[in-house]
Length: 143
Image (cartoon, rainbow, N blue to C red; front, side, top):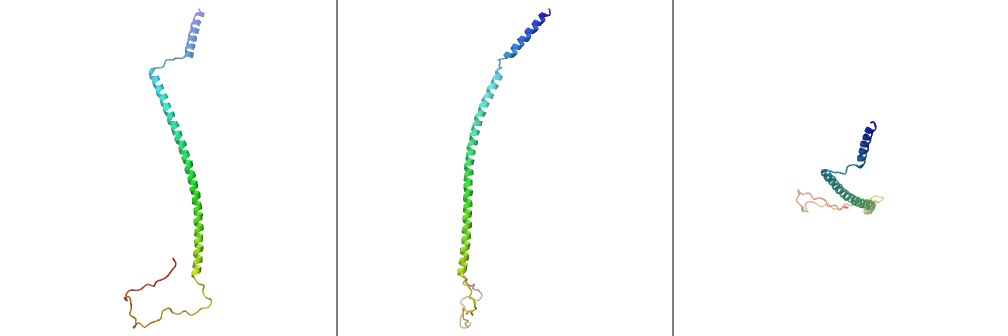
């Protein structure tokens, strides 16, 4: 009697073990539709990911090209700045030489200066301009 219940229990355990190892191959239609939807979304996202990676690669390439142009322009700017400062120094030197050439050296001894205009009697010469207008002297200068 003890053997008979043991056989039944062992048979049930063996069957349940077999069923657990085999598994169930039945998928409900709603679950199959959801799986297909997830697969299509996965494929779509994979395609978008590939496109975005291509865009990132293109943008990286463009960034490197623009960085090269910025570096080149910076180098040219430094060169031009150096040229400008050199030209300014040369211009200052030429201006200084021109000022020295225009200003004659003062003589070591003083000579009496001659008046440039002779004094004339006011009664003989009539004024050319109205008396209330003041004429400004014309000066020659360096620009």
